[in-house]
Length: 286
Length: 313
Image (cartoon, rainbow over all chains, first blue to last red; front, side, top):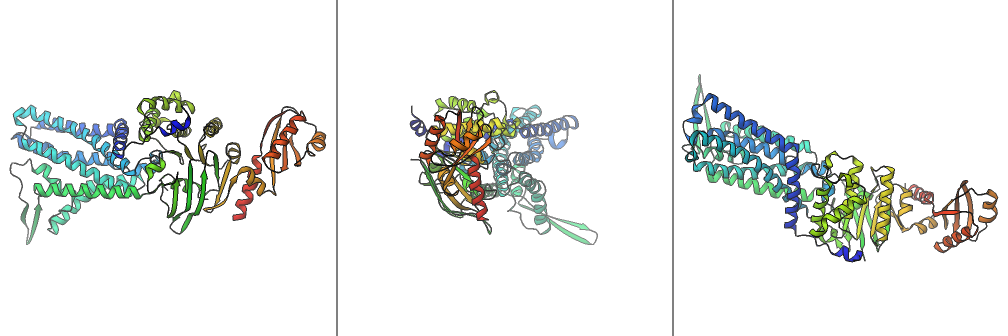
């Protein structure tokens, strides 16, 4: 075979196939990374802690009803596991391409940047799903122990789907922030501050003090993950009046309805995914 | 015929113009050295040819295809090594290179062989299945060089490819580039090492302050900017008598001057082109002085480089 013939034999795959190729190898990188192991250990620690507390203290909120069990166990912890997954797998997914210079290895090839972005997002989603699956298995395992196979409520299935959807939105959001920065530590820091403090703080200020429904906050929409496991879905808004001596304070608590919560999560996912992609397409390796 | 072309290619970073209306067309199978001082715009130009940055204006064309409008088509026949890339640390060279093979569409049945051959080319066989995260900078650079060989590209864009390598690694990379030249590739290579460019390249493009100063064959550039004179360096197997140099070699047709660098090296300045250079070699061999090497002097290119770069300051 002549060199010229050899040159012409390579047919560059479609962009869709290149998404799959990027996903496969970045997942391999995630799966073997120390951060995957650390997140797995954190998830196992959270699960172990819950298992020990429930077995030892046997709290009423967990053991009175099967729905109460899943609400207390899953509803209160799964969003934390999801946010950690988003930070671990998405926090520097794109900024790392710039700071660590891995982009210099992949970008100068016949592949669209969008294929790299989507491939990396999918691999992060699969890796985070694996973590979520571990947490789910341990939750259900405990549920089966206390309430048997018939004790798994259908609402848990709904909540699991909502959680999975929320995971997609969280990763969309973290990828978007990751695309904004060229420094891994900066993008991780901003994501951590926003998810662990920022959103909660804004939600509290807006809802309780200004008494406006925080429909524009992602974590507000994620409330449906836990609320769907309530015996009765919480009212959309609850007004509580409290007296502190001569002063009366009115606090309003908002709860997103299921369609509203899913819409917030969905809109966050779509907008941040598109914005993140546009940013990555435009960002320069200077 | 393979080609790369910059058409009024310009890149601005705020008010700073890193590359200024650069127009340059390189075609055919050859190796072109891309020279210029730090900050001249070499890497910026190469980045615009590989989608790492976008031009502010102008076009970067590869085989006539605009890199920024149709990246996949433009880069399908190009392999590039820009700066010192990092590879995902948890992957092994085999996996990282297979990924590049897959992205570039190397047929599945050939991937394993291509990966092994390219890794063998950079002498990293022992490290084939070790994770890249544990590698030194030089080892990573070797793997990145291997990645440029995978798909037998017709065009190679190399940005200081010997950076980070030990002397042996540098020599091996030069051999790889020479070998690729022999396989009729178009190689566009930036470098600060003028001896490397003299040794490997056929032509040079010099750039300073984002502007192209000169693009021509090395011999034309050196003769044009050194009063129509060229210089060759001659290596000898045995010591030569100074009288022989002054009496016989200096008076050979075309020779302007002959200077003894040391007892086994001569620097001959001559007037004329390749034909004169060839005749002088024949005459030296006829003198039976033990010629073992005969190559354009790297210091000649260096002189021209310094003159041109100084002139633009």
